[in-house]
Length: 185
Image (tube, rainbow, N blue to C red; front, side, top):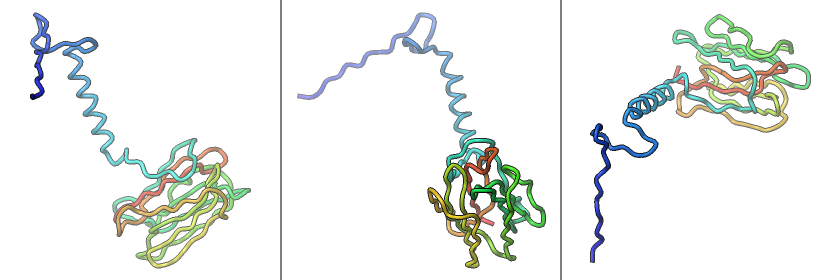
């Protein structure tokens, strides 16, 4: 007693050597395959790799990254009334990036020593970023803002990676979400 199965040949129209079925046309395969390949190619590029967004996000997107020849040498946050993080800047080599985020606030900066890199971060957020503690490979710690809200801990996926950029989103009142970019220096 075995299981017997019958194979039924696919239907063909008189004019087409390709099987047809309702809702599918032979000429649909090529554009669909091309669209799938294009989607996979775009998602595989580094510009589409998404890091973890810390915060609720929303608003205008920003990105600041180190270049291939220079490392991050300092970071600056401006914090406004109520402890809201208003903006962020990175110094890459000897040049400061444009200020990203909302205007206003009192600015604090953390200048890294030669050979020093940010290796992890702890922070809190509510509707906006509220606090951030940065840890370096030399054991130094920089604290911005005051702890209030949902907490997070950010660190690289691989040993030896360091902070090479930040991106995120901001609204008119401040930074609504932050992404840490980690890579080898």
